[in-house]
Amino acid sequence: MQAAMFYGPRDVRLIDMATPSPQAGEVLVKVQRAGICGSDVNRFRYGSHPWPPGFIMGHEFCGEIAALGPDVTGLQLGAQIVVEPTLYCGTCPYCRQGYHNRCVDFVRRGLTGSGTNGAFAEYVCVPAYQPHARPEALSIEVAALVEPMAVSVHGWSLAGVQAPKCAVVVGIGNIGLLAILVAKARGAQQIIAIGKYAPRQELAYAYGATLVLEPDDPHLQARVLERTEGLGADVVLEAAGAPSSLRTAVEVACKGGKIVVLGVFHEEVALDYRTILMHEKQIIGSLIYQRQDFADAITILAESGVQKQRHITAEMPLHDIVSHGFLPLSQSRAAHIKMQVYPSA
Image 1 (spheres, rainbow, N blue to C red):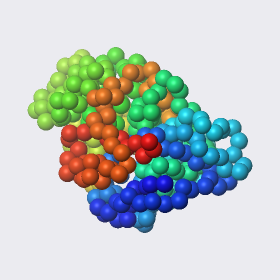
Image 2: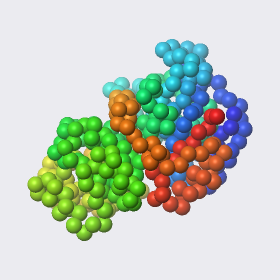
Image 3: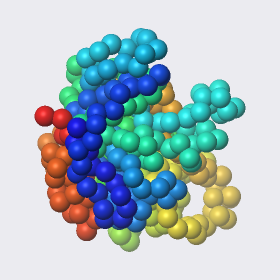
Image 4: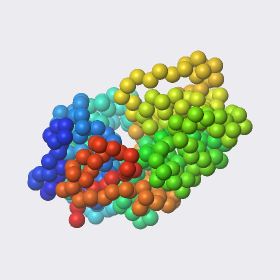
């Protein structure tokens, strides 16, 4: 089979290798679609710490079960699936409670495609607990969006707010746009999106945003207060991973508001803790998802009418993943929301 092997920063090569055989507790998946995540791009640019190079990236994917390991039951050959790529020990106190994303061994195990071989290949072996059935209503292109959608679903689950008067999404890249769909599905009466670039702003409106604001608008906080009777938003999902975005999220939340951090930060962030204290604002960290979040993401995407022609801004065969995927995304991500690869013909 062909695979895009990661050998180090800016060194991903298309290679021919033997198709893997599923071992006990595994299934072989024929990859149909795989999304390029921002974390994949960062590894391409900077390296894969803490995992040594010499693996195949790719954790946002769907496919077909091509072979079963010797002891696998409950799954069928030819089944159309979406893969939940979380790897976990299953025995630690967190795993036993169902919090697989909090596994004590998570940093070492990570996700399929992080240190272990992932979906930028024609085939990949995964643990038999990872597949979810792909409903007919979910195209393979949209099915490859389930993993990032589950990130947004989990953030909303942690907020624990149903049908809020106002939800704000800060950052309208892939995760943020999907978070708008989640807010709509969860009954938010008003959804305010904060983000750049006209195509993304237009898609935010199409997905249910009632107002879209520029992040550098000097009157941003006042505009949110104006829409919320002077109170602020009940729920704020931060999906940009920038210090200024988190500060904005804190500013626009109401007293007692929930601020859920989905974005990944690579630097320390200074916040006005006095305001957080005096207004009892709650900042909640959100790490990937749990199994129910993944199942809910499938349901929401199957029912939400994702505009895949506008959301998936580039598609390419596996052999173009460097020239048409990693290299342009390394230069600028502004022009794209989601790029996808089709490894199998």
